[in-house]
Amino acid sequence: MLEAFLDSKHRAPFTVKRILTRQAGKLPHNTIPVKSDILYMRRHANIIGQNVVKLRYKKDWTQDQLAAKMQLSGYYITRQIIANIETRRSSVRDKRIACFAEIFDVKVGDLFPQKAVLKTPTVCK
Image (cartoon, rainbow, N blue to C red; front, top):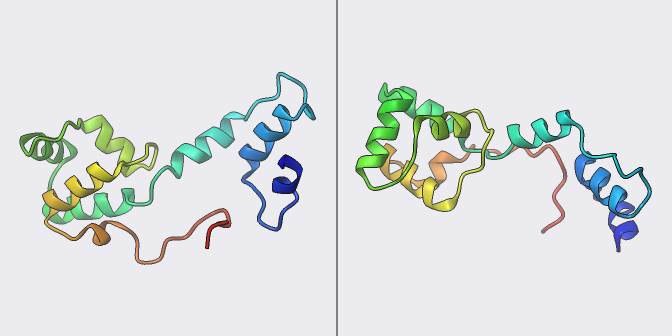
């Protein structure tokens, strides 16, 4: 199955290939994803980060003010978490997306980009 996955028309991202190939015994044991691969995955952990920044600037709020408003609404979040979401270093769960939509008074769909550009091809249809 591993070979079929790697040889398919839709190739896995470089990091996934490296991990799967290592597990199949084709690479030395000490070969693991390099730091640049991990940083790439972290930088592309979510697609709403840029719109969170835009909506926050429209409201003229700081990250601290946004965190305070979300905390007053009953959601646990800190300024550091918001910074990581905005810079796309951490993923965003559905509950937090709903919270952002509620705080910014927008529809959930407005948090997502109009046209999501994916760096790797998708397999699902």
